[in-house]
Image (cartoon, rainbow, N blue to C red; front, side, top):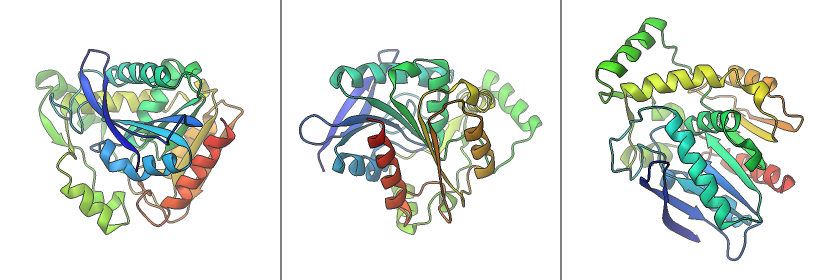
Length: 278
């Protein structure tokens, strides 16, 4: 596949890895894709390859703290660091393709970042938003006392690492996808207490922000999702103010369907929607 390994520069001058799948010549459109928690750009190659094969460039950064990141892994000081990085990414990608519409894609935790970005930053720079199983709800209910403890620890020992709670057997149907993720040396399924506290705060804010979203939106939600709560995500979708919004649900699909049997249908729906909005 026409894959290009490159980098982007974060808000603070930090160089971070990025993979780009792009067709020969100028693409019809461009998608900036944000991966899920613990993952990295190399693990979403199925998505990038599909977009490239359909004439659309797909830019996939390693999010701060993950993938080839050479700082404190699984750590941020504040959630807004991700939004600041996306600002830098949008500027970089639009600089490379100034005449092409840019869409923001976010899967799982990347979906949380995407929702936060379009409600708190420059949604007017984007042609649309694609959300895949966005991290706006969770099956694992975390009690208030535990969240308070995480908040305390985030101040006392902010870089203490804890497990992120993801069971990969519940993320993918495909045993090969589970194996590939478990054995990937760049996958990192730990976060710091500061990261966890900032994440909890970001979710609590983002779930109220549907009425602030007015750009075109596609949400794709597997109905057998074991990580987020489909019904809660669908309620969030219903709260979105945009007059141009589309919900696609998938019976029997798990949280990350792209390397599962449902993957081709999910990808085809997403690319068709993007093409309708070019």
